[in-house]
Image (cartoon, helix red, strand yellow):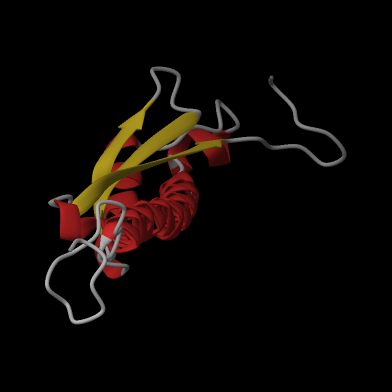
Length: 150
């Protein structure tokens, strides 16, 4: 009596519960895709912000030119120590951390900002944060109608 209406047994082709497993697998896959999209996009925005901060820190450091050389007309270069201090001060003011370097000729500052992005969806699968690195560079140029000394 496999096909009894009284519920004595289940039929051989009875698939109750089979759709539930399929839906559960599909929902998990869909949540994973949404998580990657949301957290991936947010990480890109965090990286863009880190790039922006690094660029602004490099510009802040680029303002620390060596006045003795600039006034006498010898060269327009940054004072490496003051440039690094100014760039680090900017990084601290926005709550960022990073490194600052000045090129050997004193005309280019490079700033690297490091940080992390705390995930929203991917934390469910054990990925709590993603590292973020931003880079910025400022090169000193001077001149009236066009950059001189390049």
